[in-house]
Amino acid sequence: MPSIEEFLEEVRRAARESGIVKSEELMYFLYPKAKMRFHLIDGSFIDIYFNVKRDLQYYHWQRIDGKIYRVNNHPLEGWHEHVDVEERKRPFRKITPYEFFAKVKEKLT
Image 1 (cartoon, rainbow, N blue to C red):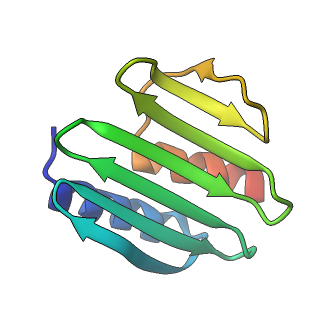
Image 2: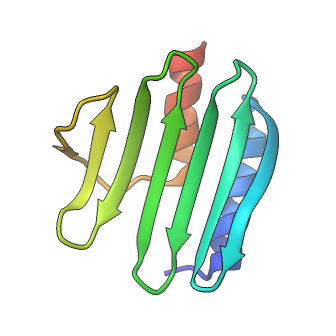
Image 3: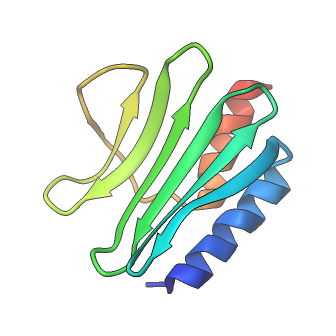
């Protein structure tokens, strides 16, 4: 498992390489947790959260039409995704920051 610093650096690299990020902000960094927000070129945003002690991650894309796409893991539920405003969680595989940004980019273009 990476350190918080390593994870945040990977997230920042993935964001830069995606070509869809207009700006970024560190929402908080308080060991063992960190959260970043990335403002996208279409006005939507992505939040990425990481808790190194619990190995908990979430990737959340808030679209400008209010719909969401989220992939996260939870100790009791494992990796799963949420699509639009559905309450139902679909099982999913572990995803990297690069894969998440690529998925969002695919839907933007």
